[in-house]
Length: 153
Image 1 (cartoon, rainbow, N blue to C red):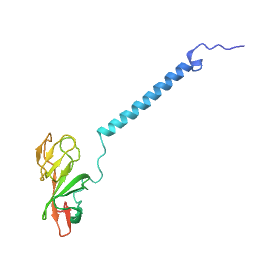
Image 2 (tube, rainbow, N blue to C red):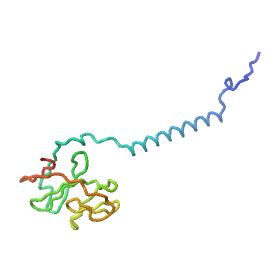
Image 3 (spheres, helix red, strand yellow):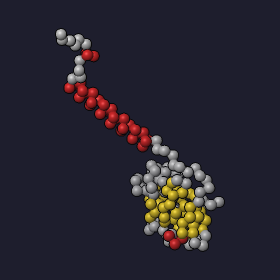
Image 4 (spheres, helix red, strand yellow):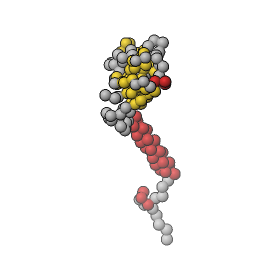
């Protein structure tokens, strides 16, 4: 006595069907991974402690020559500290207001320069050239005999 398979449910999976199923599963997995990565890029997680208003950062004056700068992290974002003179220091956000690139201090020109789209800012953070729509955020600084304190009221 032999049994005949009449319906498609009773038939074993054929090689072509298996390959089509496997290919669809692979494409779906790749697409899902790409969509997840794209979503993480568009919506990054908030920085932990970025809202902390009582945070202070200290920079030793020995690390900051006159006309020099140093990038530190203040309130969760890169901040450039510029020593203009013996008794004058500026702390500005190092994030360009155009597309978010990190600006660099050019001591010879006395300007902050964005390497992405050539926006420039003066020592006070004001836009001097380029596509940046607004000035850099500035932070309160205090100079003591041996250090600069950023954020202290």
